[in-house]
Image 1: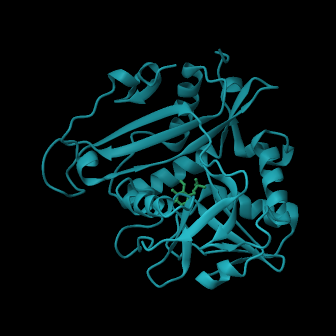
Image 2: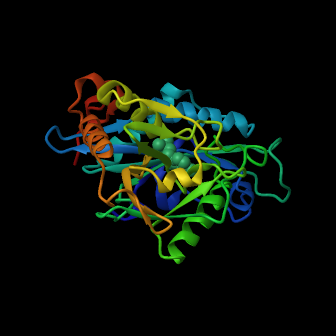
Length: 315
Ligand SMILES: Cc1ncc(COP(=O)(O)O)c(C=O)c1O
């Protein structure tokens, strides 16, 4: 399907993407005054079902982001979940999807501010395309760009404007021949990738920067922490991590809605162990794949089926 023919939710209605327009002077476009989510839908071919992962949790984070930006959502979390199910059903997806709820300041005028500007809301859903192509692991470089600090812009909110930080870091990494960037915080501790949280394993313990390290509080991060604790029983430490701890790690991986669980094979040209996927990463990836494909009954509540909730079936 052409993008212009996709059904989106915008302006309080389901419309064609090609008919949903924003003006050139739109506040959110000019000043980055918006916030958004990225939600993944996993297609289960055997069941003919599209399962949305942690749907409510994403809308709860969107609510928190909008509050930070003095914005308001036109719907409750339950209504947003319903609208998203309806949107996916109307598009009759039969494959993995990526869903992008977006709230932005909609005034078409000049003057940067958050107050006294109306908000607009949209949900766009598109087929999901693999985020990384790195069958032999991601080659990462520590970025010369520091992760935005919470004293400059809210780091734990998912704000459109602050993604310039991610874009600068990612592009620098790729221009330097790496696949992905690792950003340090202003005080030199490890923060995260350009659009994914970072974990490392050392001597059987799983480490990840704690939420005060200017990281986005990832929903995949939270899910992976639960799976590591409950299913793998590995010790977990959330704390500040030094750059040199990356060089001594036995395993490093990223987590994210788009990234899934993606392993890192080198950092700053130093191989992570032997450069292959380590055992903790492998076990977590396999468990996560079972969860997202609906094969782990204990975690069915993390999934919201689209078609079981709607009479209209997949195409
Ligand atoms: C900067 C940043 N950090 C971390 C993440 C991972 O968060 P989540 O697992 O909720 O997708 C993302 C993904 O959206 C991100 O953009």
